[in-house]
Image (tube, rainbow, N blue to C red; front, side):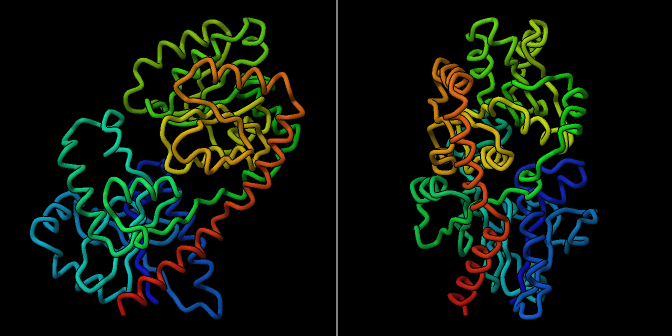
Length: 384
């Protein structure tokens, strides 16, 4: 079984020096697949592919080029059908192509498995760039429907695919994401204190992690925190870790005001070791996102043994189970109440931490890889 693995977003992130969620997923999946492919009894191989030119050297090597610019390729394929030359090139090297990102090729004679993490651009266009929005969504829908099988990351996202794109349930498999084993490792007290000092924070803070964008709902977290009593805000400041993203201009004055009041900090980007130190020192991670296809930061916080406050909507209750405080993400008072409850009842918070740690153990990249391999075998058998 020869597998072609799409690595376009991974390659783009590597060139930019920062991997997003899909890039992390692709890299982690490749590592697990590669490890299994090296075993004596392995019956498959993996070859990386990517759209684009001047592709970088990745951990998996330099990807084989599928074509140049994806949008031009996808538009031509949507209007005229699969490219014979591209199909022949890919077909000569693989038995199945797995598009791990939105760069989904239409191929003649090669079954395609496509990852669709969520339908945010289609369901919430207000959270995406308006440039060519309708054309992009039309093309996205066409390319997704052209795949032989879809992999998604939660039952919630699967329902969205069924309800909004009309894809049959049998053509969709759910393979939950994994958590990097490093999140389970405890940082020594000395190193943790050094990292906190470098960040200019002390234990007891509330922590928000994620790119600044409307979907992450940070403004309501800021307002919820500001509604707490002054002595609570000083003892439990709000620490925000995340790059400035799209549509976040209104957040910047609020973050500056938070810092001016001495009630929190915006730390922009931090290396992973420092993020781990913060996770292992926080009163709670506050993650009331408005929409998540999975919500990996919740599981990472579970692994780091940090209490979690998250949304009672989209995929987050499915992922968090009974190991987090679930709140209405549109209700600032509910977010504030959960923050207060975490402080007031440390015993209950610790019980949720213990349940979260056990829950995080179920989310491994090894399990994700095994489920993905089962999808490959199923699709190849169906197309034999």
